[in-house]
Amino acid sequence: MSTAQEPAIGIDLGTTYSVVSRLDDNGQPITMVNAEGDRVTPSVVLFDGQDVVVGKEALKAMATEADSVAECSKRDMGHRVFHKVFGGKQYPPEVIEAWILNKLRADTAQQIGPFTKVVITVPAYFDEVRRKATQDAGYMAGFEVLDIINEPTAAAVAFGFQQGYLNAEGSSDEPKRILVYDLGGGTFDVTVMEIRGSEFVALATDGDVRLGGYDFDQRLVDLVAESFIREHYVDPREDPSAAGKLWRECEDVKRTLSARNKASAACDYRGFASRVEITKKQFEEATQDLLDRTRFTTSQTLKAAGLDWADLDRVLLVGGSTRMPMVHAMLRELSGKDPDASVAADEAVAHGAALHAGLQLAKQQGLKGTFAIKNVNSHSLGVVGTDPQTKRRRNGILIPRNTSLPVTGKRVFKTSKANQKSILVQIVEGESPSADDCTQIGKCTVRDMPPNLAAQSPVAVLFHYEPNGRLKVRVTVPGTDRQVDSEIVRENSLSKEHLDGWRRYVCQAEPTDYR
Ligand code: AMP
Image (cartoon, rainbow, N blue to C red; front, side):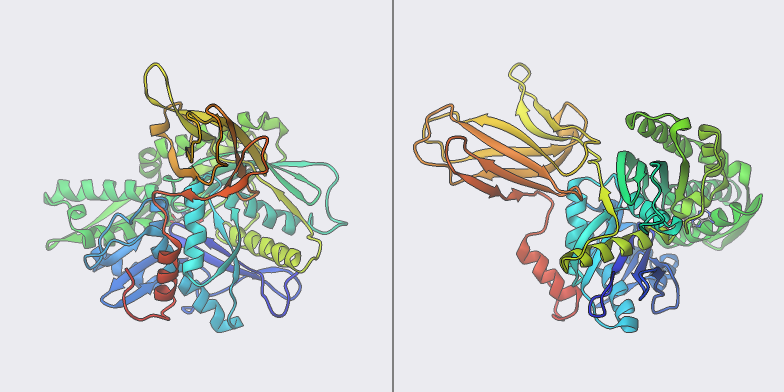
């Protein structure tokens, strides 16, 4: 599906690690290696004076210069700025993500020449603000983002490709229902999908954007630190570099505990040194609540899809953290099936993204795609109204979560006075009846209203979710031909001017700092 001019590239922009894949000449997804020769790149950025270093070197610096290192910036997406300050500056999280993408681009371009078009993955549970921030990160890294794709969907596509469902002759007539359990470094996603021939249809999705392998690491850090305190009366977590070093050590211990029953972590701080042994049992007890959270969400999602465990053909494991044996055991107990780890946990998402990029490029050339994806929205969309009695800001849900996309919701507002010039609509995503507990998407001011509208004239506002979960707002005035695409003014989003400035800066076309 890819062409000689334009390679089909998919990027799994992970919380802790990122992966690039491209379709080879036979349309087969392959994983690219980075400049260091590795298939995965740590999503870590070091601010070293004027230099910005991304990947393995930045990860190493966690042990010595933790104050200058940005890790898990994906977790801060949707916030105005990253939670740490570097050289007196606070960067938007999407700019830090852009630096990561820029390294991935430069390393890949070294091997295949310059390219611009990519598909980037997002957790299915990302809200609209985080989706936009991801697209903006791609733009600032010099890319044209063909599309974003949900990570579990991408994994299912890679699985379908591997199973031969994407070939006309290989696609099965019987729909296959799969549950994708995706526990990565920083996020958890669970999606129930139906594969109908070469169509991938999401039935329900849920997750947690702040739950992943990183949280399991932190529990180990706490176990080791507590043991260290008992022995030496000092806490290595109080110093960022000692804590960073301990975290790396504990991530290693965690990986070892996926294969062995015990492992030990070395810790030295303020002249004291210890080796702390951790058993698998201790680790599993210390993280039981984290696993239980994923168990609860998984059961809820299956219920939301209207299915029972017996209705599922497979439970597909995705994400590096599914290598922990306790994940297998929990899912086996819950589903009565052996979970399927046949797709490469770290690479399947990037492979699915590359296949989706191939599809998008084919479509741009007017060719027919070999598969189709249908998503659902992971959060309900609402408009803010005021409760006449309590005067509290309420969330009036317009499009409930798990609705098949694309979808358009409509709300008719009435002008309050004659000749009203504008209407302000506040949009939120979330399930809470209180608008303040939801994600604020932004404000949408409808201007250019037709003149001389009487008071109480109806104005229809259409909220349109695109297939990838991005939102567009359009306003129509019934009885007139007035129809405007309305710009959403976002609180935590960068303006076009800022995006362009950062793009020049990140891509180093402009050497001076852009702020
Ligand atoms: P991903 O974002 O899917 O690459 O997942 C990265 C996460 O998987 C990190 O938190 C890793 O520590 C974790 N991980 C990778 N390999 C293992 C393993 N063998 N056992 C436990 N966790 C792992």
